[in-house]
Image (cartoon, rainbow, N blue to C red):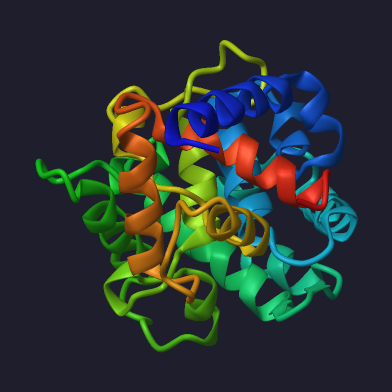
Length: 254
């Protein structure tokens, strides 16, 4: 199909999948259980961090993580003791283990002691490549004086050409408007036009089949190539097409 027909097709698919029904099978359902802003942020951050592999396993393990945090993640983060961390049961999701969870809890408390929102650590630094800079700045702040900790592998660095899929997904959830009942729109200091595609195996495969992405690797260069292509269709909200590309791949076997 020609480009205009392709755009119309993907607009339709984005509309079709961008609704509350999408939540029932998606990890975003976990932060949707909460109403307090910080609880939503933390639940979303952990759920996005686990968002690779089988979706049912992601939801199950993200839900279990919230149980380990007493279903009050912000209160647990802010007020936990060393004994609380020692008493946490073992946890594993693929390569994310108990030691990673304890590290994440400790580091999140450091960040929340400095600011009441994680948005502070992602805000663009005044350039069009702001979110690449923002992701890297968040990574530096999160890891602090332990950049070599084994948990660092779960916080990707786009400057090392990582696609940073999980952080881009977290940003989509936090930044895009809540008007469609899926994303949260909690962060007002970052405009949706700066978001980058959460490139995964589904969206990458579909984008290549449709001729929207030439680069064969799922890395940051591919993220930029695909996002720039989609910005030509919707400069203010290019990542809405994540619903279309992911939906076509994950649900329709495109």
